[in-house]
Structure formats: C-alpha cells, structure tokens
Amino acid sequence: MTTSRDGAPKPRARVTVPKLQTMKERGQRITMLTAYDATFARMFDEAGIDILLVGDSLGMVIQGQDSTLPVTVDEIIYHCRAVARGCTTPLIVGDMPFMSYQVDGRDALVNAGRFLSEGGAHAVKLEGGRSVAPTIERIVAAGIPVMGHVGLTPQSVHAMGGFRVQGKSEEQAARILDDALYVQEAGAFAIVLEGIPAPLAARISETLEIPTIGIGAGVDCDGQVLVCYDLLGLTPDLKPKFVKRYAEMFDEGVAAARRYADEVQSGAFPDAAHSFGVGAARPSAAPAAMVAGDTANVVQLRPVYGPVE
Ligand code: KIV
Image (cartoon, rainbow, N blue to C red):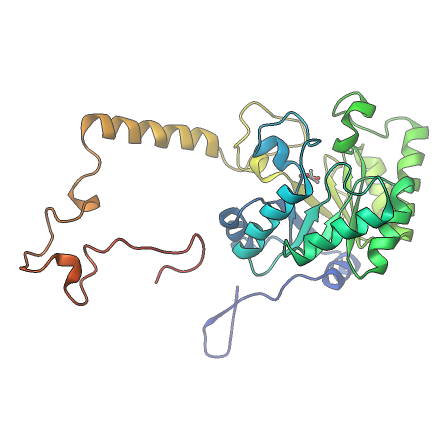
C-alpha cells in the first residue's frame, strides 16, 4: 500500500498482463498463489501477491477429491466470483478444468468467456503444449488473456502414471521446451512450469520472452506459485519436496477448536464480555439495543471482507 499526497493509504493499481511482461523484462520476480474464497483473496491482496489463481486444485483442497478431474466450470466460476469480491489488486486467473477446452475450440472459447463475464476473472489458464496451441490462439484472438501450463499437468495424472516429475530424459525435456514455445507462439501471456528439473526450467525461462511461473521447477523461473493450502500448512498429510510451509494453520486450527470445546464444556464460554444483556450492560427502562447510539448490545453485522464500520 502506498500513500497519496494527503497521507491517506492509496490502494495499489491492479496488476495487468502488460505489467507482468514488464516485470520479466526488469528481472522483478512475480508472485502467484491459488485462492478460492474472498477471505483468502483479501489476505493475499494485503500481502501484495501479484496473481491469484482460482485453481482446479480446489477439487483436492476444498472438495476432498483425489485429483482435479471432477471439477466443473460452474464450480470454478463460483469460486472466481468469491475471489473477485475479496481483492482489488492481483490479476485473477481462472483455471479451465478437465474437458472444458479439450473437446473443441468453440466450447473452449465459450467456457473461457464465462470465467471473465460471470466469474470476474481477468485471464484463464489451461494445461498442455502443442496440442492445445490452436485453442489458446482462438481464445487469445477473442481478447481473453491465456496462461499456459506445461511439465507436470495434473489433468493428465493417469497418462503420467501419477503426479511425477516430468522432463528428466533429454527427449522429454526437449518436448517440454517445444511445448512451451508453442504456447508462447499461440499468444499466451505467461506459462506455468510445474514439476520439472530446475535446469530445464531455467533453460525454458531464458528461451521464452513471456514470464514463466514455477512450481516445483527451481528458482530460475520468472515467478513462483504455490497452492495456498500448502503454503499455510493446511494440508497435513501432504508434504511434497517443493512445498515450503510458511505457517502451520491446520495445527493452529485444531488447537483453537480444542480450546473452544474445552471452554464450552466447562461453561467458560461465552462469558459476560461475549454476551448481551449481562455484566456491563447499561440498566435502562427500554431494551438496551433500542437506546439511540447504544452499540453495546447490537449484534455487529459486517461484510466477509472490507473494513469494519
Ligand atoms: O490448480 C492449481 O492450483 C494449479 C497450480 C498448481 C499451478 O494449476
């Protein structure tokens, strides 16, 4: 947050596709996280994150599925809307789910358009290289920015035989570089490099003009992305090598819920400070909440995000 001339906090300008290109050219690293709701979007906006991806990873971390495959366009759009309400600065990217762009170009374009018109996203992401290049071209031609995604592409989990690092052999590495070039040529504004050896990601980042955003792809990408539940320590059973946990929110949540349960069972919660009409409440002939200007007994309603009035 910068300040205006009168000293009031001035919100940062919205991150745009051209700004991301400039960041690559200036060697400024790009930050991206997934987000699925308004509260997390607000949290990451306040932290200054450049891009929020409403990822189909929500199938795993929100819905409890064992892959991203069952996620639908409607579900991602629902979460996009929530994220769009929660933030003002990051570029919002909606992830096109399995089978929403692979069948034909017309369907892909209609679906991509819905992420912007109904979901409030600014761009879409789709997985694949050479085979999806014509689809990327068609969506981009309609004025919809597209982010590509190559390497470990979770929608191809069965073809890959699991979530495995890709590009370890010379032949595979050459194919991934080639795929990335097709994606760039088709007009994508950026590309996610997932689950590939760091030297290959470095080579692709050097070769491409558009920004590369790495996940499990080493430090030499133009930016990094993590699934926010991993970063926050909300996925206790999963600890892949490439994930660094910056908090342990699952453990903190368990501890908080335990303290709450203990206090409910012992009668310590709710105490007078968290109750209406007991303890410090002002005696009055009229119900306290009806006294003009009295806020002590008024249930405070506030939006899920934004300032408390
Ligand atoms: O769905 C998702 O979260 C993703 C990121 C891992 C890049 O595609």
